[in-house]
Length: 272
Image (cartoon, rainbow, N blue to C red):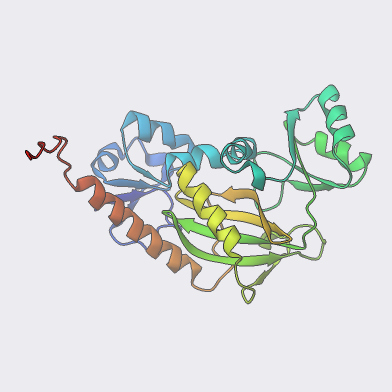
């Protein structure tokens, strides 16, 4: 199984992987064409690889398309798990829609910039000043009800299987749970099975094969917040190696399945 990677860090522990600098995509076209898998391409490369060269990429095309924008992600979640999404309003950022959203969503509420990560584009809206500051930063209005939680779950899935998970507890600001924003890890409290089952079902249904899902639990009921296609590996000791092993197993499994010849001829009826 020959693989090329455009992300040296995320494929460091995978065997027989040739790293290519992303800007050398066209210079290394022959090597890319001869590879069985193209791993962790940058978003701008995906169309050229999938539609131009007909290459198999990992993470999956769905992981890229759905995970690239919180609006797209929420729409997909609403289609497959509508009862597990916080109340969400998504509108164009213009004065009329901004006023309508302000009137509908009870304070305090959460506002997000659709293309952001690590909690940097997530804001707690408590008053008009917060609201106006958010509107000045975002191209699209994306707001959700604030759930009564002081922690959430990070559940990591590779190839349709649970790799790891942990609780993320609120940091010093009393709002963000992201580790990059001061959140802390709780590995002692078990993962709720309802959250794990929900994530595995949604990942399979949407064909998301490499993601860290964020889930909130309210009175034992799971709510999907978002997923990150490129999630951090700092939450648990040895997590990077665990993820790499899961990736290798999944790619080999998929390659063997693709190489297994299937006879398209239906069996002849048996005379009785």
